[in-house]
Amino acid sequence: MHSSPVTPWYKQFWPWFMIGLLSASVTFSMVYLAFSIYYFDGGVAQDYYTRGLAINQQLAKQENARGLGLAATLRADPQTGDIVVDLEGEQRPERLYLKLIFPTESSRDRSLVLEHVRGGRYVTQIDEPLRYRWYLHLQPAEGQDADWRLTGEARFPSDDEIALTPGL
Image (cartoon, rainbow, N blue to C red; front, side):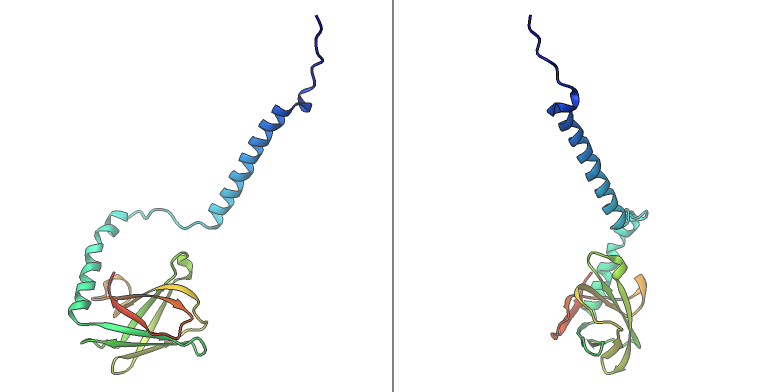
């Protein structure tokens, strides 16, 4: 009987193939772990059920704004940083609160207070020009206690007027 010489394990293909699969798996897992820690977007809110029920309040704000005949246009000047809102409708509060919501990173959200100038015109100034896409919420009070809300969506910089209408 003639036996062929057995090559040592480290000179064979299959052990290195298995080690390569395991090391690739560990490497990719570490990369995904690092990304998930660095780009953590928060967990599920603890009060998700009550937030879900609050949709009725948002619908009431929308209907109230529609019933008051409210609408607004917004213009943002990228050179001066001025934000001008012209409010149409029956209400003229002393201040309006504009929330700029960045779609993907809540850390970039901004809240601005616009002061009443004359008629339905409100003005504020920002320190740095806006860029990219934003969701806009305009309301007469800060937080969730406002009677109405106008919403819109804008891509900055823009020379066009942005319409804000009753909405969620």
